Image 1 (cartoon, rainbow, N blue to C red):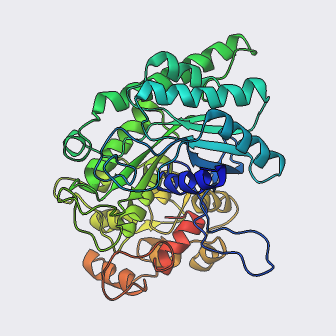
Image 2: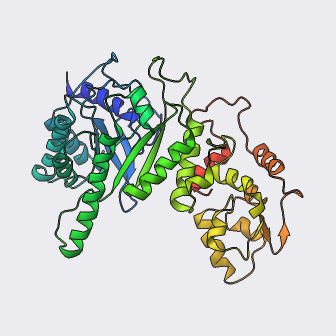
Image 3: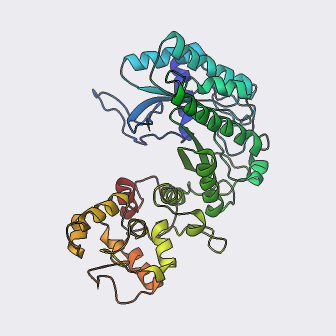
Length: 428
């Protein structure tokens, strides 16, 4: 098999891994045109300092010894298979880099022969890139669950970021759909990476020349909708990962039905709206000071698909509103739907010079379609007369143009305008 055929197979197989971001564009080349964005292989991620970088995103192999029923690369699936040699990946990376196609490498792999064997292959690639080719671009690799500590430790000294995919949020889910995996084998490398990062940080305080270990941190991926697990369990797990393992990011991937196995749920399409709500809730955990137990509980274990999680929380705690925009502290402002981190800072800064009225908020970029029901400006309320949460909910939902039938929606194209605004502006 020639290298182009391998690249086609293994870049396509890598698209299901969302633990680094991709552009998601479907733009194809035209006659006499230049470039194509629909093929897999190039994705975008963000470096530790916030720079957006283009990565060659491939699997080393899609041969797998495991038979996880939710995975397209499972051993029982009949699909074209291929394996890159370490030298082939190094050549591809260097040639693409020299042509200015990419700035780095995202390298994952199915579990080939054994976890240790697979990690040894990954190690050969990153070692050769760094030591022989003197490649100083960004490298993100997987840590294969079950691999020995020594190999994970060696790989961590060559790469910028590592990720260990949890995939299924509960032990029960793993037993049902991925019986070859277990919770301990997944969390052990995650703990090793965390310890290595902390140790490296401390050593570099004393010796500046001390080698870095995974300087851009670690991430993971959770599949949403492959099991019956509620959003509450997923969000609690994410919160625990941020607090206990210092993860940079938890990525959520809507389950894509790739098999008719009776253990899997029957879905017409991937639960993309639910995935979007989890991303919004994750944002609230990391930047807005919310806790998982505030957003969901045993009585309400799943998010309202028609409302963003912050708006949903505010309606369930309507007794806390309205808040006076000229008196509320920063943390309280962050909890008002429609006011994000940047908006709250702008309000605090503007209040040093003058009292803010409703029209000033428009100039500051506040999403007043939602915020108006939860605030007063100079003592004046601009929402509806009632503070009944159900009536306010109806007002907000009516203003969000949703599809009449509530099938899960295609990625971005049919997500409501309200959600698009949130995705672009990050203001919840």
